[in-house]
Amino acid sequence: MSDQNDQLARDVSTPPETTKWHELPSATFRKTKRKSLGEILIESSALTEDQLKEALSFQGEGSEKRKLGEILVDKEYISEEDMLKALAYQLDLPYYEKLPINDIDPSLVDNIPIQFARDNLILPIARDDFNVTVAVADPLNIFPMDDLRLILSTNINMIVCSPSVINHSINRVYERSNDASQKVIDELNVPEIGSGEEDDLEETRDLLESSDDEKPIIRLVNGLLSRAVKERASDIHIEPYETEIVVRFRIDGTLHDTMQLNKRHLGSVVSRIKIIGKLNIAEKRVPQDGRISIKVAGKDADVRLSVLPTALGERVVMRILDKSAGVKRLDQMGLHQDIYRSWTNLIAQKHGIILVTGPTGSGKTTLLYSSITNINTTDINILTIEDPVEYRLPGIGQIDVKSKIGLTFSEGLRAILRQDPDVIMIGEIRDEETANIAVQSSLTGHLVFSTLHTNDAASTITRLDDLNIQPFQIASAVLGVMATRLIRRLCVHCRVKHTPSDRELKLMDLTPEDVVGKEIYKAGKGCDQCHNQGYKDRAGIHELLVMDEKLKELILKTQDANMIRKQAVENGMKTLRQSAISKVLEGITSIEEAIQKTQTEDME
Image (cartoon, one colour):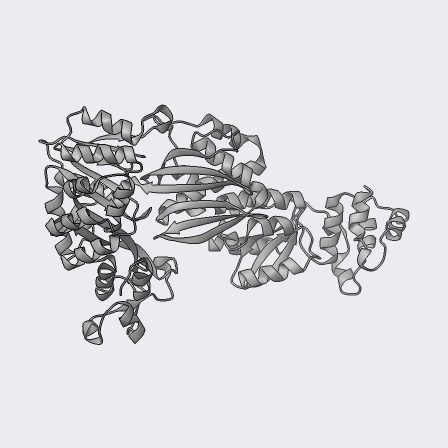
């Protein structure tokens, strides 16, 4: 492509033969005196001297002075093309009637916002070793040229084109630049939801064919989905503000600004997403949820779609689940050796409740999938009810919650109990009814797995009490509670060795002797491997509360989380903070990340 760019840069050094500028005595004239624009137009177009004098009289003075060419075009004395050709000739610049769109490298516009290009009618079209050649509609507008020099860090050569040619070229080049190297349209496949057959999406074809202005929207949405999957993003946020739309990716648990769009594109972007998510594009007053199945570069992914109306427009969040990754084995979940032994003992029990807690996106469901896969054998019947089913597990019956038709967690759980299950997994205990059914099931010979949203393992007891589960039921039914979090792994390519300060040692409850011989690292400045973040991928930290007689006696007396936590620690429970610190001492994460992800703990 670089050779092609060099050739294109050489080609634009002279005007194409389609123009008539060879009829003008340019070479002789430019060595003596540069002609005025009016003189050039009289020689090269149908403009008369009387028309020129009339236009000059309309120019005005000072800040209100209009450009001569604009007046002549407005009065239809000359065409816009005539004016631009004359201006190019006056400034000794090439004029192009067309641009070689297919030969323009889309990487030239990677760092140039499309709105900047459209507002200023400029487009880089070629690069050589020393310059970038830029097509412009107004070569006298020097300010965007100065900005472009800073953006591209190189010299600028200009050629002149009509606004319509540049606008058309901008749309085509930016379409290709969305993901040109990855061939988004070829790689992104959107099948019909709820069907195993491929769907050509009639609505998508109609939208694609409707107008040139909307084509980039199709490419934009496909490109966002493709890029998010390839950059391992878990969520795409499309957030409307007063004058712009901000697109952010959540990568390794942290949101990063990815793109800014003009606010006027919001309706088109949201409509496109609703179409592929099978939502109602006419309804903008109420929240909507949907699901999209896509394939990018051979990888299957599910996208959970949420559209929320706000004061500034509809806000979209798409959660991405990479199905090609599959479910990890339990021994690949990063559990500490002691926790792994205790957990495998718990999940081997015949009845009782085992709970996994943590905020959204902390790895709860992944841990449950690994756990029930670990115990799945041909002699037991495992059924799950989830909202939604995230991974399809072979040999396990999985049910999707469908609240709109009355299939809630509680209703689905009642139906499951009539299917003679040995093991039941409930995606989440959200209400009192589901909690009571789960407890009763565990007390009548079933092993129940579920999740709750709490800050730590001990707080789960308080949460069950809030759901009106009696203390004696908690003590009898609950086998154990695992609290989990995900912390970012340091990028092994750019991490930097770090000596902890006294303050950092105090925060980690360590002494200088505890870190002797340990290699502790902090995040570096970033590199290509980690997208300049200093971190890449995530690791789990865990806190396992195993029910014993002392804890049961305490729960019968009180549901105070601090007291329960203190007793669990005395019993040998390793806290989330301690689990995070062990990752620091292993060189997996930084002190800053460990403290931040466990800052809710009381370390006193």
